[in-house]
Length: 86
Image (tube, rainbow, N blue to C red; front, side):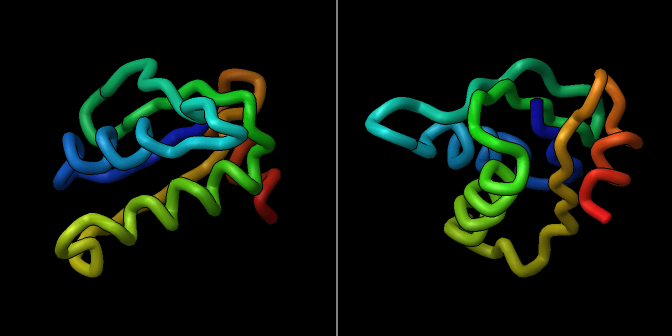
């Protein structure tokens, strides 16, 4: 699972992330939105997922103004995901 934190343009983020294709299949599926947290389910490896999502977000008009954080969710914990990135 991948967590995208962003308070603005969430509908655009969801649309762009869910349109990512890997091996001719959709790579991400929205799980839920909780405030600024947008959770996506995926079978793509964590680091590749993060790169794909960041690239997709760059296709959103005005993306430069977005404060976006993308991390894997490990053992149902975003905190473990942060430590995995270190």
